Length: 615
Image 1 (cartoon, rainbow, N blue to C red):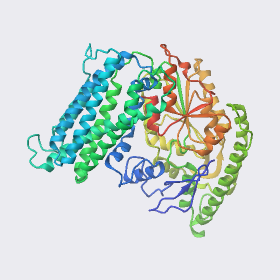
Image 2 (cartoon, rainbow, N blue to C red):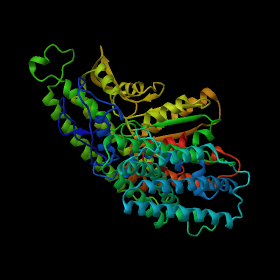
Image 3 (cartoon, helix red, strand yellow):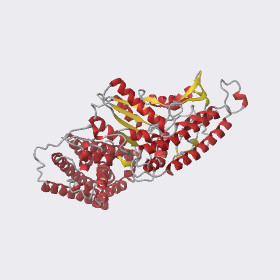
């Protein structure tokens, strides 16, 4: 069941405050009545506000411009770090010839940077700004010296048979055009009459340069955190040390601070230009990393490397795909549409509680669930802690949670709170449901990619599978197969009964295995590669059964229970780099195996996209 409760009924202009029984943390909007507008993520200010409240991703208006833009275009940074080139570089397994070609491209790239800074310095009006830009240019020249040392250390001939590729050329041309004033909405070069107009060009140049600096600082820190001091076989330690160094981090921050200063008096329209330049630079960086030629097998992108295999993708729904829990949405539909008095209740097809009584009953059920859930988790954790991965012990412990979930569902059904819901209201709520940013895109690309033999299954405790199907159909992915509980209806009005199919961790694991077995019986092929994406204790068994278990969100109970039974939680990128180190010259689908006791954590669906599908 895993339901959430609202502290107040939502009226036409308000949002409910929810509290999760798993985290006790308030999260954002739940259900808005059918006649009120409810928007999907990234389609409106309302949806954006709801999503940022839930995910804490969007910075407030007082944060610096560069910080806002970095967060807004964070997806591009993930596409860069999960590129085959970056993963091999971080693993230290990158072929030296590939690195040689990269250095040759980067030298050309850095020379363009230095020239852009020179042009920007000429446009700056303030002496302090000129000096700051000059210092940044000097940093680039130092970076070029480091590249010279690579050439000397490894006896590289970077001019040998290396032509400038199109990705490098596109970025450098974009950068120099920007520094020359060739920017949409800006006067043509030679027509910048006033110092203020010239200063805008300097700001625009910083808008095109800053994302590169921040991206390399980000890569340096991420790679540096994975360096093993005892590993003498990491040939690119010097590169990593440079970009993870305090000096380079300070240089990136200096670039951002200067962008903030130069843009402080700009109009909204001019700031929009900077945002477009920043986004374009991030996209060109992604192209740059993905343009580096590799002549070696790589772990990423996952699905490209397993295109000859059958793929089965499983996902939880509530708080994995959604911003809010479906049980709270269904309860709010019931509360909002319930009769307000005896007069309005007369003549109904199915006898319903009054709205006020329903609200009180739901709050009581929610309170009971929260208290008993926490007791159940504590009872599980009171068992002796495993000194190694203990799947059998975990299964036995989760039987207790399974019994609890079934009893909770019994209380809901007996209470009658789910009586009288109209199927069309449920479907409309599903169509307007706010989903996690990037979730739909991942499923769409999986299902639309040619030559990818993949199926997507959603396993959910949700009481009403129609709500889930409506959500995915509205997103254009109606071929997702949904395995959930179902309301029973009489002439499209819910009876309050639930057809129970998936209501516990044990049920989910049974469904998971059954789907795979049915696929084997039909195709009689080798076992497919399986991926499970989930967020809670209810997903734990499926996450472990899958070849790759990916954890989204930050459920403390999931981590506590998993750790108690010897499960390791590893950041996905760290795990990918470790797998790349172990990769042999011949690709092998045996790289990933279920029941390894290791689960991989991610920050967002964009990270899943980057890992599984690439750019």
